[in-house]
Image (cartoon, rainbow, N blue to C red; front, side):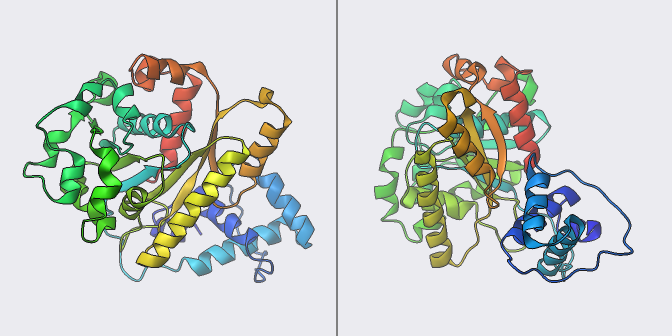
Length: 358
């Protein structure tokens, strides 16, 4: 199991988590040998061992038998690669949810900061026409500059300059000149209409960002609060490319512990599935983040949070409390990890950054 996980660019913890999630979806898994093997241990998400043991009991198998079945399923689905692993493309992540106010900008910015702090070269793209990310990082004036080219122009193919000229660096010492922003622009509200006239519009964002990819380890897209063509281009950009490992690039969705977030998640998932079927592509769901959670808001909030946590796929990567540091950093136009580097919010972002296999 450890060797096979390594062959697929994963650690044993991630492989075990994926194996258990797959086991939940198979009512009658194959028999598996449970004798003679050396013992080994790994960590699972909070609450997962108890849930898995309960499901084993319901199926009439021991915990060890259930685990062996799960690992056997994973090994069958992940044979040794027929060719050696090659250099992987830049990791590409969109933080997406068409429902507004759930914390897309907070999560995408925080993960980008944490990755840059850890030594990765990171580009964060403000793909939201409202430009909240650009404003909250202190670059609002760039959204309204005249006579400058924009991301949309590069997506349309009408730009004449170099897309590198659009980038700005966050000059905080913590990020070591490794964190760059591609700001929003005021023509982004026209993106859906403009892209409808572009040939193979789903690949427009990829064509625009391709010249930048060699300069970064990770590119994070702060997604738009809408579905449609705008979202399709971003989802297509983070698809699993040929030869790329699974669960490396993909989608992270911030949600709240309420019914509205469950409905919005279903709509986004439907759009992803439709795009994948239409384009014959695979977009990996990296996970959910339950944001701004406060158990004091009542029983229904707690129940909705538990419903998210019971989801086998995509899994909940983190539950982040409704704390003040994120709001204060945003209002002050200061990066969170610079404003409150030791806060619970900042440490949650570091933990999320570790979830990305970069």
